[in-house]
Length: 115
Image (cartoon, rainbow, N blue to C red; front, side, top):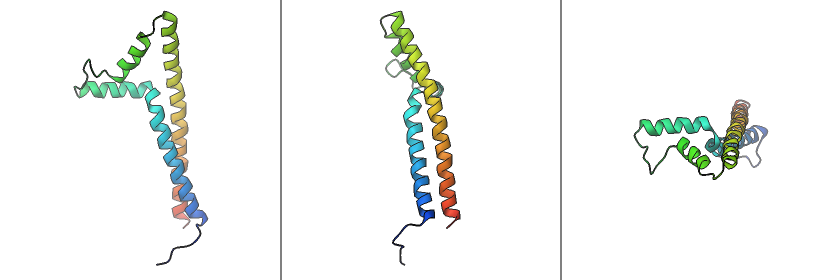
């Protein structure tokens, strides 16, 4: 069995598609910590499994505690605003990552189809 010495356009499409999909998954993984909806789901899951203790607070409790630790009302407002802005930025980044994941899947599919 011999292997080609150069990659054709369909192989490059599959490589770029896989790379784009991998980058999308990494982006989704990194922004998930800022998403409040994900934190709410994780908190509900933790409570449902009975793993919530005072030593291991839920994700929403951790976010609330970060805000509550601020000394002044202004500091609490800034922290809360930062949390909300982070949530919406995470939603936008997650949408972009989902589009990238779809484009990566299309590139992989086209690379396989045009073989």
